[in-house]
Image (cartoon, one colour):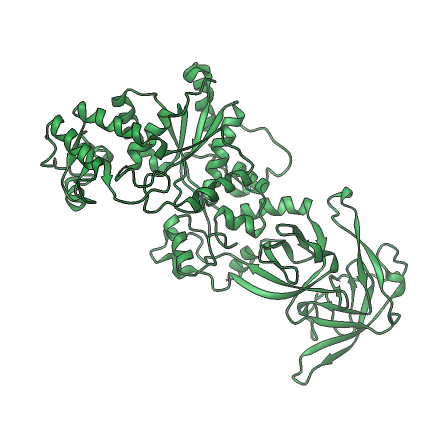
Length: 577
């Protein structure tokens, strides 16, 4: 048992996005107001103690990140503490792998817990609580099957029916419960139920199950126990044992709150307070652990940390930063009702940060680039052009990028028969090479299949960026890499995994909306400065988007993940369709 401690927002994403300049003052959300009222009233000895209680049966996702930021942020604001407690009451689905991943995710987001606890820490005390309720005549052992118990519950408009085992004596219930603990009965043979009111309007009050028999190995307690408490019984009592002052849950637990309070009242223990807030629902995303597990197990993604997954591990691998996730959580705020948040706001938050912090580099992301040969450039000459690392950060400095007579450009930056207002390269047309010179396309070279493979161009020596005296004005600027110096890399272009804006609302299997184009793998040619890039390092590929180095990278082959495009191209495509 741990030592006793002694010491909304309903705006739309567009409205929230406009809060992009500075730490503007905001009014208290409804949870902060509750906390301040409690502190003003002298409740809980002036303490604020929260907890984050995940079940270790999967990886955390972006919805959990909101809860993490809320619980830890609230405690931090009011000088309080936060416990990390693992709700490990179901040994069949839980694993140490998930425990370690959860701890890593919380720390990656920038938070550190005061205490690390497990619901299994309290199994002995929870068992004593259960016996106490039996002795009070408030719990009984039921031999009914799960189907029979479900039928007894009734419906929201019809009262339930009492179990034939409901009026067993206290002594008989104690004897049976102790024998359940001793392992005398098979799984499903008996359960322990609270004895409340089978006619209660709240279905959770209709004699809920407190304990079930489950002969399974537990990741921490081994084979000590063969009965395990249900969530509704373990949750409030664990909060009480830890002296949690404000137990923050998502809205689906609002109807559970009366039962939470009932257990605390009847057991006469510390009255933790449960408060509900809206869960995070994100467009083009599913948050259900069951559905995420399907995606992993059925091979629709490459694992829990696939960059298309909404898991914190996947988001981290894709290149998102802890600061961008915390900013996103702050912008969406805390609401009392569920709503659907545009994933574009999450992408906005990472773009805002990476625009200020990443180095701009040249990368020709094209498996079939076009070679540009500058025919009047001195043969064999190599120039080291000084390129600004980040115009948003004056302190970021410059780096040298080699320039030669043979360059690669992306195929989409040339059209043989361009439409009006096409400002990239075309026969007889001129463009500026980023950070270098203005060139003019003089000749188009094709292979036997009629495909353009090379452009013969001339350059204007007086047009060098930073010292241009040519007097020429061109409207197009394209990026490039020197053929002789380019490094090859693999680039993974990730897009949204699902094509439905709200797949959970669709009357179809969510997997029918899996985007077949959510991942495109292409070859790229990158400037030599990237050769020493480290796993997790982030860059802006000029004109393409933001990318980070993937853990699959090796000394011989760098792999880059696209974190996000420079602009919201998805919204544009959706508008077209």
